[in-house]
Length: 127
Length: 384
Image (cartoon, rainbow over all chains, first blue to last red; front, top):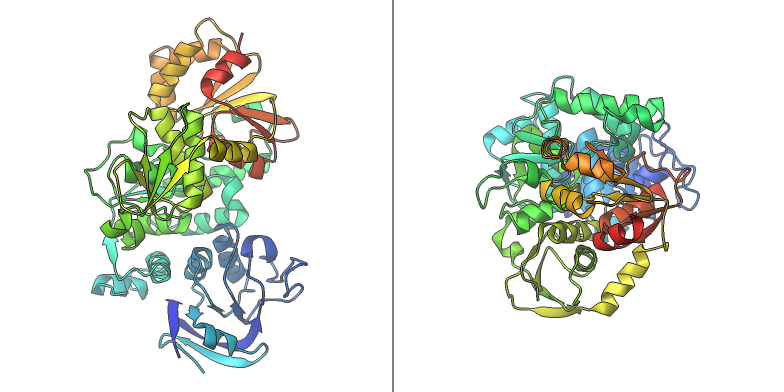
């Protein structure tokens, strides 16, 4: 298990795996936590309470404020797992205090959608 | 990352949630950029001041943060959307004005100097060579790294804000001496070396270079061209500094062909309804040059000239403001071309400017066409 911890914390929840990168500013409704970009593979799904698994974040750095708003509006993911660290997602999770880790390719690919996991972003483990 | 005991305690929330938040941001960015520790910085220059750039989510966040957070080091601010002295003339949305006011108040409550300028290097005294600062405005980061010999990464809004709250920054990238040595040289081959050519060179450099780049074939770069180079570079990529020193490594040419390609990408109109000057905002020398160039001439079109408030006051004292206004120019301060709501595609089809950075943002954010030409040409063609 090799997880790089970007924002510490622990979370338990059901995984929601995205194939596409996330553009938090444009593609996510900050009031509901639903993905509103029709072209995104998570279109119509809610990020709320999930452990969000996605390759990396794209788009404006202001997207970090969107992540903070999701948390304030109680519809944020419980934690996030990425393949690559981008500064927008890192800043946003830090502002909102949402655990964030970067997984190795092998580990990332082994995470299945819709499974219950415990992410320990203190020790760097997925259980 | 290795943190000191104090940093670790602050991260855990022992000094309150605001500092915990700021340290979480520094650690997150540090981990993402492979820093092994934090180091002290003396000055933070923040972006994310204009309501157009941070929106409601940013406004709400800052309003909450500023209830009890205080900046720990000297903190200066980028331009906002307009200046409050003249905003009534522009028929702006009430909501925009109210939200912008809230953002302004939040930053001031936390202790920021209300500079509202993208050229802090021209209006403040600079610390000594080698000092670490945290500058989020890209043209300013590049300028102080390259010309003023300070050290900063091309910070984002959040890393600079976290630096302002803590006085720290991750020790990564351009803060390390080895990263500041360029591994690419761009040979400046264009004969006509005006500010537009340097802006286009900067835009090219930003696309092809890594953290740092060497530029050869340039001597005696004037202020206008130097700022244009910094701003162009900051717009197109991640490159955060340049040097004129010779270095080992790969070499590429910037010649007429490369320049034309970028000019064609950014220049989308043959003319425009209004002229805008000042991205980056004009400094005192540029204002005095402009006043000299406008002697006996009058603009045929509306011309907006952006500068810092402090420069505007000086320009008024020396009579330059009067000369520019006599020629039909409007002096605006606390804001700049980029993302200002004062330029709206409902009223304007095309904008004439000599700024490569301005051209990029006018196209992508304001949605207007741009006619890009140098200042001499603008004065020659657009005044009588």
